[in-house]
Image (tube, rainbow, N blue to C red; front, side, top):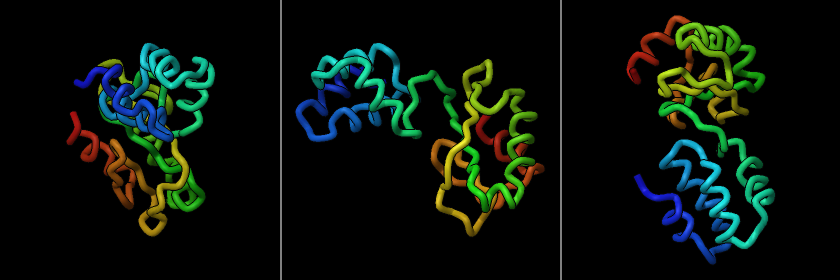
Amino acid sequence: MANYKDLIASQQGKKGGIIEAFHAIQSEYNYIPKEALEEAAKVFGMSEAKAYGVATFYSYLSTEKRGKYIIRMCESAPCHVAGADAVIKAIENYLGIATGQTTADGKFTLELTECIGQCQATPVITVNSEPIFNVTPDMIPSILSAYK
């Protein structure tokens, strides 16, 4: 696993470098640890509050520890009409967590997201940004068991 200080240093002096650094950190850790936020603020010459503002502005980035597999359920109108509510309930029941939580073993985090851009195949979930189309509640055990 790459050191967050090295990831930040590699983007120093670049336009938009803090965002790229945060993306790189999240790719390694699945979230942006507090120490990395503090380091980025120093390196990019801004307050910690401003660095935190950058990290929390983008829904893709997270400052909260998350699971190895991040499941995101699209909550756009087409997915909602196609049965997203039943799919989210099936995921919550299968994993034993509520939306916004991480399983006790640290494997899965369940989040909601805006449109994924795959409205022709609703409802859609992503697992670590890989889309899965036309999801039904009874598909959840086979989809998620592949990641256990």
